[in-house]
Picture (tube, rainbow, N blue to C red):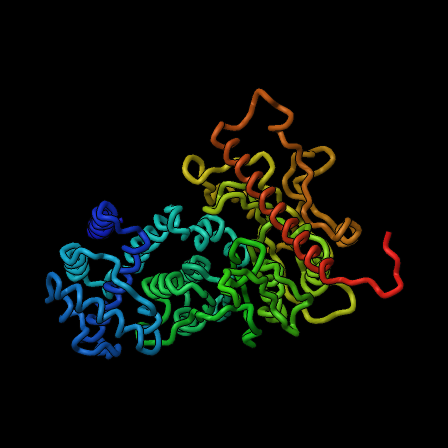
Amino acid sequence: MSENTSSIVSKVWSFCNVLRDGGVSYGDYLEQLTYLIFLKMASEYNKPPYNRDIGIPEEYSWEELKQKRGAELDTHYRKLLEEMGKKPGMLGQIFLKAQNKISDPAMLYKVIDMIDKESWVMMGVDTKGEIYEGLLQKNAEDTKSGAGQYFTPRPLIKVMVECLQPEPLKTIGDPCCGTGGFFLAAYDFLKNREGGLNQEQNRFLKDQTFSGNEIVAGTRRLALMNLFLHNIGEIDGEPMIDNTDALIADAGKRYDYVLTNPPFGKKSSMTFTNEVGEIEKQDLTYNRQDFWVTTSNKQLNFLQHIRTMLKAGGKAAVVLPDNVLFEGGVGETVRKKLLETTDLHTILRLPTGIFYANGVKANVLFFEAKKAAKDPWTKEVWIYDYRTNVHHTLKKNPMKYSDLEDFIRCYNPENRFNREETWSEDNPEGRFRRFTYDEIIARDKTNLDIFWLKDESLADLDNLPEPDILANEIVENLESALESFQEIMTTVNVQNEKSDEWEPAGDLKIE
């Protein structure tokens, strides 16, 4: 990092700490930086040699904003945010539902002054990216904000991208893109590929490669700005991230790659007020002709949607919780259809303690979409167990890229058809094992939640994990049990309601 870059990053972080002491959260600071940096960059693009009109009226320009002080600044800034949110294209989407969260005008002016002293258009992409990604990470670590659910660990994303190895002039989709982590990792991979990119490939990468959905307005704003600061998209172009729920309908677009981590939580639901004024929750199901089953299970719906999104030959890497691998009923149907219509070739079992949401037991499913055929496309599934006897915590022992390098070697991205098991009868501790289609389809409910390694913590009481790791595992197991119990209670209540409505036929005797 150059001295100038280091100075800018240090400055941005110092303001972050000062504002935090004043009650402004990382997320709120990040949003204000987004608005203000966008306005400053629009001002820079408006001047030579660019001479581009971004669509910001003169009265709300950067030059006008930086002249205001005190209460006048506060009033002007609030009005500016409101008016910019009504504009079309990227401009309106960045400022959609924008609010000023820095109530002290003196503090607000200091942030404006800091941003005014830098030339953001000329600043290196690495510098802007480091500032923004760093703040996104801090925001995710702030458990009160709940932003962690939109933040997939960056080492895991990098590994998923390296296994898929996206190629130039190909499209990449993410139906729930959060703050854009998968897009940025794919962008870096393509930018740094051996031999570089030609002019056409660079233009396609900037403007046509990425497309996604994010229904949370604040998160979508951060994603758009994150991409823009990394030189993806145009300041006066159309946003490449849609604000609609991707599950509602098949948008018709097909992708070469899908990289995604759908939101945690099994049920899709909506909250509403009923006729007597009580708050009720109702499960959401999506009635789509392209889906194999109709269900309110959010992950199963996303898995079906991703299959629809892919072109024939399109490749996907998707983070999904354990329930997708073993749940019966509609879950079994989805698994069988996935095995039939795609080549589900690899499953990476992830350890606990790597996500900001507690209690998550997840996996990465790698599959390739295929055209309709008489026989199932999946011939064998290779499973890498990076969960058993692996202990990570977010603070003391976070998962690193190097932790998954053995998985990448086993996956063999250069030629995944040339693989070798590390497990054998002679090496029962090997983490990489192959299962044939016939072996899987013979399992109860086509269960893909397969493990074979012996849990050392159960056998070796003298070599237990650290107390904080054990405590986290206990919390995760309790939360998982509570979720399962709540689902059972919901099912029981529904059945009770149905039995209350049932009436026997006239001459049927009940004893």
